[in-house]
Image (cartoon, rainbow, N blue to C red):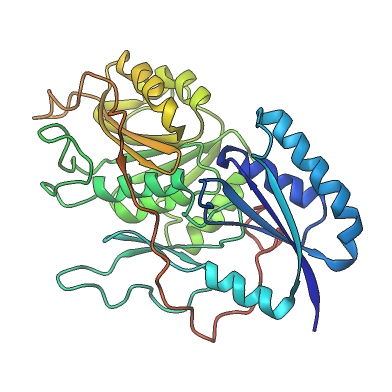
Length: 366
């Protein structure tokens, strides 16, 4: 029975992409991101051939040191483990961890290998949820990372029936769903999970995914087509300019510096009354980000948090009946904490395709 080496890197979530790149540079077969550990650190797992053991015992600690230095991490913030596994056990363990997650009553993120509809039948009085199918090992992501999960949650609640209360919203200010937007912008769309979800949640809207990395656009198109949203979505390489305007909903899951730097362009691209969802923010960065947008006329509606991460929902006044929408002050420093997704779904059926995620299976590099 074939053996393999599993490498596990635990580090602050903002460096997960760097860790993934380092693992591929070290020659791994596959990389996937597990749930954060009890300390909120990202957990990156990778598979290597057992004959790589001696080389990896030197190369991986060196890679960890480079990441820690580049991101300014302290001693002990980056941890590495190596252990021998049996291929059969790898397959079972990997699939056990990669299960559908319910974002809300209306939205589920499901591994691409899962057969049938997860969370079916729906609860009493509920419609079947929209299901975004993803390859858990690819850049497309599993939806579990707090920044992605919080964006998906806010999008699904914005898409709720008019008048429906929304978790964490200020009473009397933005606590109800706005009209469905005609145009949606996903800024920093990566491989498109938020664009695909937005297209499902707002079936009458046109969705534009925009990213400065030209390599991800084709991956995003494939993912949109695989989820049946290809006609509703388009993806471009570039950034905001004056030609992109008229968006009723904008979502951007990147990091603090580009979010604040692009605030004027984002504001010019938004319609009066638009909703804005911002993430990729650490908890202590949310207020700085919110105040940048408030100076441009935006009001904050919600500040959601999970682990050390935050997401903001904001509104640009101007829609009918929403002149007083939002708060003048900064976001609530306590945040409205969102539980991590439940993993209580039964394991997938035995007829799932028996394969592992890899960098060449059509979805792009993890």
